[in-house]
Amino acid sequence: MKIFTSLLSLGMALYAFNFAQAQSYTQPYQTVPTAMHAATQSLYSVNVSIDGNTVMTYTDTNGRQSYNWLQDEYSFTVKKGQEVTLDVRAGIWSWDIAIGFDWDHDGTFEDQQRAFAKVGSTASKNNSSWGHEPYNTDTYRKSQQTALGHLGVVQHTFKFTVPATAKEETTRFRILCDGDGYAYGRTVPPFNLNDKVGYAGSMHDFGVRIEGEAGPETGINNTTVTNNSNKPAEIYTIDGLRLNTTVDKLTRGIYIINGKKVVIR
Image 1 (cartoon, rainbow, N blue to C red):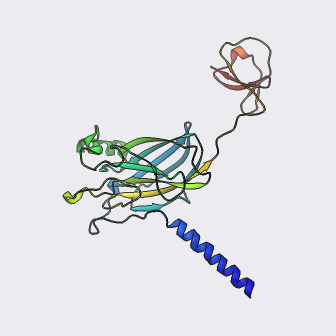
Image 2: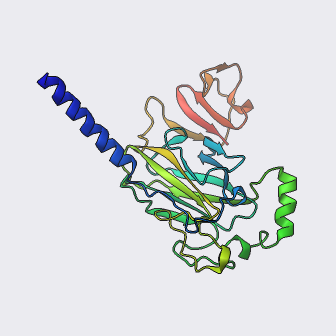
Image 3: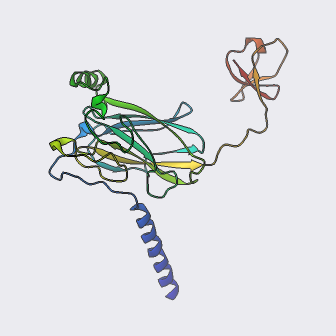
């Protein structure tokens, strides 16, 4: 009975700890409670790629929810030192988009970028997508919605590099679209991923798994070939398929020739 009680107490303590950890990130709230959330000012989609390869995609066609806690459903893995490219689309009337990564998993998004203004700068019409071509006219935005066939008109590409100090574990990145409530002529605080969402906008949390830097390749040498020859050779594709040809007839690509990794340029 004592053993059971001890285990139960331990389990409850661990649950409480995990719950506290899960709640350590700032939750959004409306700065104008009477105002309604707008899909036209919320996240539409994000495409994440590394070295040109897509590693995560997400689309919220209807943009119904102002806050979406999706780190357990949508995530990707990246190594320290790699560059992460995020192509983000927001609703047709969106003012700005902000992204932040919590590389050290402390509950704060310390590495932040904004699409149309500097991080921490005052939000205003000129200091937003409305102050940048081609998004500075209603006509363009409406025509783009017709051409695209969806709400994701406002687009920006972000690039982040994973720092060497990042913790090798699963953490989060956050995307904030508007959320500051430009309505009612109010004085608007800067976009802050660690603060409020507010009127109209959306906040999405996604997962990111950090791994150590990739080590050097083993088993074969890296060799670059710029001048081809007719010398007989054992040639394989990078997938291990043997080719019955000569080096001078190879097209551009990566091959294994006589046991060495060769790049044909």
